[in-house]
Image 1 (cartoon, chains in turn orange, red):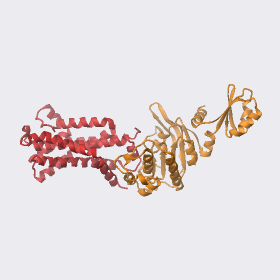
Image 2 (spheres, one colour; image 1 turned 90 degrees about the vertical axis):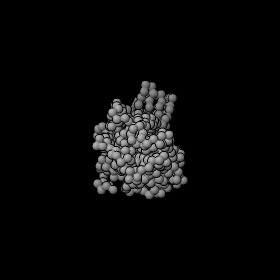
Image 3 (cartoon, one colour; image 1 turned 120 degrees about the vertical axis):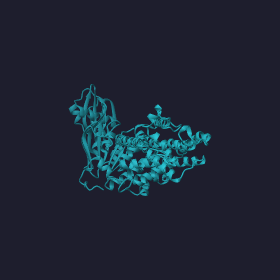
Image 4 (spheres, helix red, strand yellow; image 1 turned 60 degrees about the vertical axis):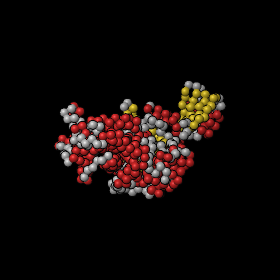
Length: 303
Length: 245
């Protein structure tokens, strides 16, 4: 283990990180600090730049601008020291080894790996342990990929959309394991496009859209922000200022004849609105989807 | 933390791939009996001064071992396509250990191919003192070094789809230029080209068996030169190969 890093050193420090592929700006100057021991969700729709960010943190791709350090050193140094374990978004397994052998092979590469048997139990692979990797189901393959990341016993665990190919049961046990790891003081950064996963398992969520970080805060705060509902109604007469002060309403907007209220508490807001403006028609209440929330946040960022 | 278990598991994986194993060992054997069998009593093949069973044994060894060395490229291309190479890149495995595992695995396959063909050669009457066997084997092992590097280069540049035809065609061409199928007549165009191709010097290892000098200074230079250049290219190809596929 490297002695350079102490508890106080942030696990990840990225500043003005940017990366383009041809004319596509995948990541546009982001700043991201992750403290040791934190569990952080990197939340965003497809194409937001999550995987590109992760590739740069892992040293798999070189930033065009800015820089990133991992436990105070370069990504390459952290990798060489065995401080980082990762489950990449895409990836199959190599064939002609049993699950146990594959995990043992990966374990042999790290300075302080977990026990192979412990890892197998932790990931629920007892029954598949002696099977060849090419004979596994999709869900089992995903668990083995998780085991491969886990057996390295890293201080920082990075997971890029880990549950995408998992069934419901797989997801549940996966997050159970993750919770246990987080409680052992591991730093975890995971990318997801499910708000529920971020909400349930992370201390903090970092929202990415179109290569930028559009929000960064405790998951409760992020949830209130993007998990809000909107009320739409045809209401030509009401003043926006008045609508915005109704209980449960965080902001009000007008599109011609209709108004849109973003609500932190849509139940309170609809009662108050109907009491104050009984003439409101064509009322719709909708959960603002994550994509929609992202679009709004990015629009706000741009203007 | 040691690279030895990694090498061990790589060897195990290769030996378990039975289809690949049987085909890559079997093909040169079949060719050998087809070509050398009918000429087993020819003691001076086309004026080369070498008996046909011996000449073709070494020719097929060159063919079989080249294929075995380059087959590491096919395995690498498959691993890359699976995303496994990226997984290795985020482990502490050093490029050196990675190359060592790939090269040792390729050599193991080559040595097996060689051993099988020696047995076939003996069955057609190839008879050499132990010392000559050893010298010849040592030369072939050295002569394979450029192909070890070439396999890694190809594996990191090509896809599993393209590497099959590239290797099949490449090995056939290298074997042809090297004189695997028939001895090259000196002063022909092919002969002067062959001097600069490492496969030619593999086939020339058979001259050892007759007490002659197999490689002159030029032979050593060609083999070492190609090894140095291709090893540098292999390093470069591996270093650059981090993108998602």
